[in-house]
Image 1 (cartoon, rainbow, N blue to C red):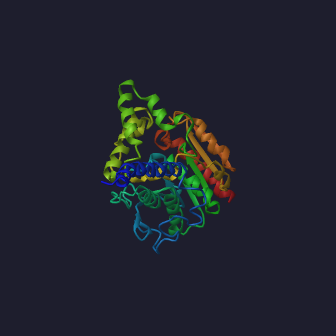
Image 2: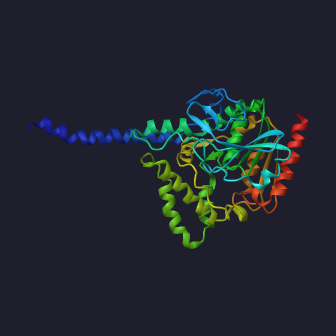
Image 3: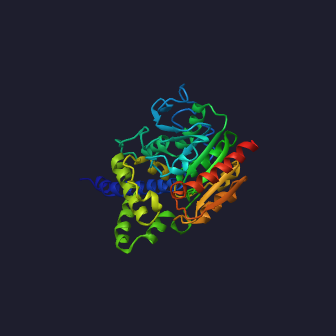
Length: 364
């Protein structure tokens, strides 16, 4: 073999390693930035489908938010329409919470299952491509924050409402707040129940994962650490299937319950088996490793009620931050309630929300 050929055989692998390393560093830096930025949905940027949904009656079930995505929903009561944005992410309500049921005598409560979970469409089962970046972009466009926020706007148009009354819980409160920031003229009143600590990444102190770790019984901490390593392994995530990822989410829900996160009522209920797998992953990718959405909340124009349970696993400071950032907002603490306020203290929850909505709608 000629010397030049030998040198080529020696240096080619080294060159390929160098190229792969450079690409990996570039990709990691890019991955650190959020794929979602407030204003993207309003501009219809990076959406798979337009904001105008296919023609359909308001009482159609499911709602067709696009040609290939159907949204399951349930309606209770009559009166002013109220759209409930559930939390999770990826856990659609298996029942009507008592606190919401108490509101249905005066308001028409619409509860929908977000795309990618529950009985709504799941656009992705597993990825055939090995192109990480291509898969990432497809996942974000299909199930990420922009897609979820866009669905709220599509539902508003399906309901033929000039402005929405929104109640969001946990991750759903985070979504509702971002929607109200993107479409301030389209929200009449906003209720944020235990809004998720997702406005800024990285989260000071480690956020929910570290809170759960600290609250777990000692005999579960080692298994939780092992689980968390696998749960946060996004390097191999595109080798997984929807069912595998959904199972992983249910496993975290069990640790969360063991840490006391569900409260006395919800902890007696079975974990819904139809939770989403890819949807929570898409949300993580949308937010990236670093983001700061706090400035966007100053665009919210609707009167806003932020609710916090005194016994919530999540610190009160998180709810206070939302209330401080949103211009026309107030914070109310419900004594004895945990994260699931409408389960733990349904009467107090309904009375507080009812009074707020009456005042907000009267002022309008």
